[in-house]
Image (cartoon, rainbow, N blue to C red):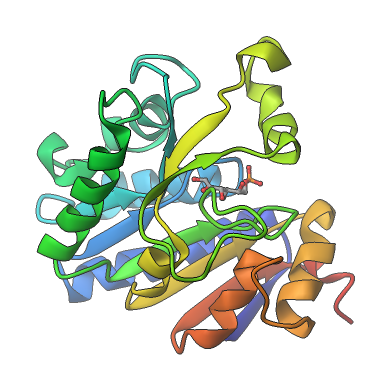
Amino acid sequence: MKLITVKNYTDMSKTAADIIVEHIHKHPQLVLGLATGSTPIETYKCLIEDHKQNQTSYQEVSTFNLDEYIGLDPLNQNSYHYYMKSNFFNYINIPEQKTHIPNGEAIDVEKECEDYEQQIANHDGIDLQLLGLGSNGHIGFNEPGTSFKTATHVVNLTNDTRQANARFFDNMEIVPKKAITMGIDTIMKSKEILLLVSGENKSKALARLLHGQIDPTFPASVLNQHSQVTIISDYDALQNTV
Ligand code: F6R
């Protein structure tokens, strides 16, 4: 894994956006895997700014998001559909049909998972997958204990993850209990992976990723087995690793 160390969240976001833009310039039909959460918000802002300033085009780019809650309407402000539109898609020139996010309202969620996996395969897989890191080591919604062999699947969210995400909801009761997520194997099939890690609250997880064992109790550890992973981390997140 290649580690790029940057001063702070702002620099992490700029560096990530530069890497993504470079990929799009080299390969306008890039298949880009996307994440939600707090970590990539500023990266999306930088990409939007670049799109305005330099007219980087997303006309031929396809995107696949890592995950979506089950049971939330795409117009619900906590759905990842809403997040992606309001933080990114509404401000770039990507055709809507080229953006893919699991349908958390599908009647047959198992079939939705199979179809999602198939759509990724139909695009010859993901070229560059953006990831954030859960403090318990989750990637996507793949919680500790998830097999490294999983394809896109339905997960029961752990209390830790529900609590971490509760900040976005009015109360804990309405935080969804299930989600659809790309599996660990889906993520590992990406040709390249860009993992963003910022803040002291991620420092234990980052230390375990860099120095711990490769083990399903810490899902992100699987990234050590991928040959094209770049981690961009700020000083705060690195404080437990030195
Ligand atoms: C988001 C996702 C999650 C987050 C992780 C970190 O689509 O799949 O794995 O990347 O929970 O979240 P933040 O960035 O909010 O700390």
